[in-house]
Each structure stands twice: as C-alpha cells, then as structure tokens.
Amino acid sequence: MALEVETDERVEVVDVTDRVTERVPTDGDTCTVFVPHTTAGVVVNENERRLLADLEDALADLVPEDGGYGHDELDGNADAHLRSMLLGEHVTVPVEDGDLALGTWQSILFVECDGPRSRRLRVR
Image 1 (cartoon, rainbow, N blue to C red):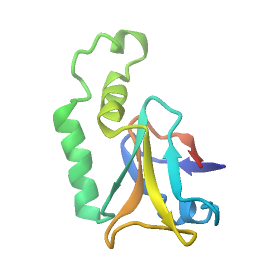
Image 2: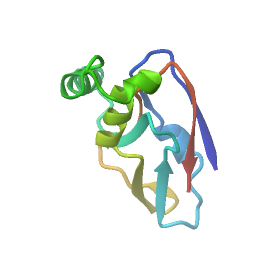
Image 3: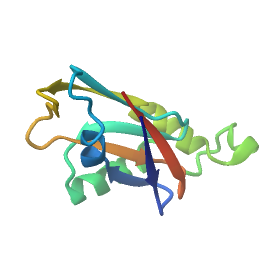
C-alpha cells in the first residue's frame, strides 16, 4: 500500500504513525515502511518538537548543505543524499493484534531531506 506525504520545507520531519496504522493488515506480524527515494528517510523516535528541531540541526551539522561535494556538480543535493543514508530507507515494527507494537513515546517519522516535495512511502 502507498502513503503520500507532502512537505513544505527542504528538511522536514512528518509523523506518519497514524496513517501507517490505518494501513496495517489485521493478519500481519510485522509492518515495514519503505521510502523509495534517495533523498528522504524514515526513523522510529519520539515526536517532540524540540527533538525534531534537534534532529534537523544534527543532520545539518553532520552533513553541511554547502559541503563542496562532488555530486553537487550534477544536481546540487549531495547533502540530502548523504543525510538520507544516515537515516535509512525503512523501518520494521512488530504488529500485535492488528496494532503497531510501538513503545510509549515512539512514532514513525518520515524525514524529508530535499523538499519541498510530494513523496510516496510503501507500507507492507
């Protein structure tokens, strides 16, 4: 199943937990969310606004936007590719009784690294 995500900023974190939950099959034992894009990622963590801002800051510190990367000669978004590699392209969450078995503070967070964009996530 596909899930559409729209972003407004170059780097933006979107909580997709509720939308993924709606797509969890009742007979499954795990749910995988996969991002078929090379400049976005997905993680499981707490959806707290200061933490999300810290994540954006940490990504900028680890991989500066203007880092003089070779790939920038092609399309100017090497930082987005590198950031998404650090984040990862999928998460897998256990399913119990048809519900995501996330911890109390855990959410599934889509992380856009090259927005604004319209993205499609795959949920299985």
